[in-house]
Length: 429
Ligand code: GDP
Ligand code: IMO
Ligand code: MG
Image 1 (tube, rainbow, N blue to C red):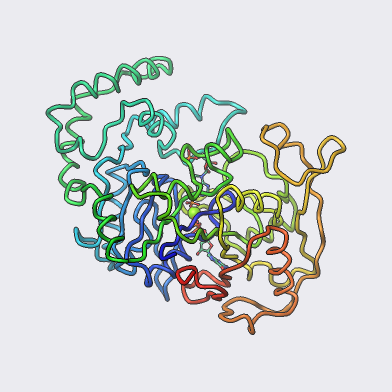
Image 2: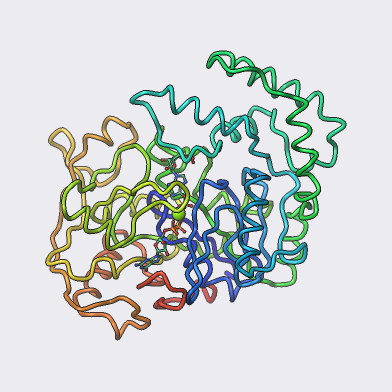
């Protein structure tokens, strides 16, 4: 199993960026395979903080970084991010960065529609990142997307534009908005095209070559299993499949390429945006978790909702996504709590459930059943070996592992790259 697929096992922001960055120095390629610039992955290396939304986290270590076909790509956001990272001294070249030429584009009209819909949704508001993700994926499936390869054929875009405009102009009229400015759109695409096209290629071919040479591929998921469009807390989800299997379809490699599936799991739970959250704490404890964990969104700056660890949800995510082992992150945020609670089941209409039901109303109605554990007063922040951890923290990790029926491969104890405990090397499996 030379490859590793990193996915979030909760509602995103589990610390995927940190773990991918830590693993990247031992990988030969890092591949994003779904989502778009709704992701916000934070890497801390010494004094430097890197915030990545579209670029694979491997770019910071100079590892070959690839945006796969499963991603929706906003070319203007990409350019801004490349320039920002270059400003921080990161080298991004046609040697170390490639974009799938069959990747669908996020256009300004998608961002506008995302905003218009959210504004009109009332209590059904999803709380999206406002980046146009949903509308862009809809257009991909609706076969009217403009893709990276179209940027090299802008003079032949008429039929595709007709399809796109027929759909969007009707929607826009419903919101009292003018039709798409076709000439303006073509002009903007013409302007950005050379920047994107320098990196564009059939990446499945490049990856095939990398794989044949016996190299290690690291797949970097965005969001988390509970935001998956099929398996998540629908409709309060994102518009892509975030589960591990997407690594294959979203990059152009077969299913065996996914290798070791590393689920990233926060030692407690957070969520941004609307939707059910059984263990949410709207009290001082929730406030304390948010403050200690600096729980503010990387992309939108929104405050993240916080709560205790929910073992039912993570057990379900691990099963659905075929997780081989987890990286338990932000353990240090639990330092100093007198007691710590873990959700082990739900109560719904007098029945006990060992899984999260599918309907939003049931998801909102379940009551968590908690197990209470003694906390620890020592600090785990910066711990780099098992021996640095207090006995009670080890007990917590062991209990989590037992409840989610999945082993712990890594433990993270601070935002810093090297503050990581290796239990079982995912690349060695
Ligand atoms: P991602 O979207 O899964 O990559 O996660 P984010 O980067 O959005 O959010 C995770 C936040 O927690 C970032 O600010 C990280 O720097 C930080 N972080 C990651 N691991 C740890 C950890 O073990 N302890 C602490 N205190 N912070 C961490
Ligand atoms: P990373 O990769 C946390 C959430 C939004 C919203 C829902 C739909 O950093 O973990 P969208 O803009 O995708 O249509 O929004 O999904 N969301 C995330 N939450 N982390 C993310 O990414 C997220 N990407 C989207 O808040 O609830
Ligand atoms: Mg994030």
